[in-house]
Length: 186
Picture (tube, helix red, strand yellow):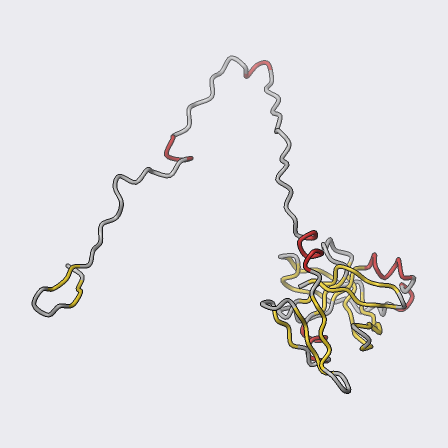
């Protein structure tokens, strides 16, 4: 679920809500653009399982983030890795604001002083972030002159195509006439 929040009166877009993450993460590039690089505390850690590998952090930073008028000091791990989003809010933030995320309704709700605050997920941003372009360039393969006379072996048709079904599967259940129940033949 993708949302946005305010940080130093600047809207940070493409923030991923991930209840499965054990850390709040923010990109180093976002910290540099906000001019907050001097506030990063140099405590490197290893985030296991992030981007399918272990990622070493550049440190951590505590930032006051504003989500729908609620300001919460949040500790982020700063990484210089390649992410499609600018920040990731994980379980530490979700638990600190006592939020309930609903992927079915695409909302995040959490209690504030007098009311229940609702944040609607930015569905268009999520689709934009994870869009897969179907345009694939035509691959080119250069064949050296000495190999042009040799013929490539033909590949087995079985390696590339699934076998065609000979007939539809038959129903393997039969009705027992005496007990009027269904059973499987052995």
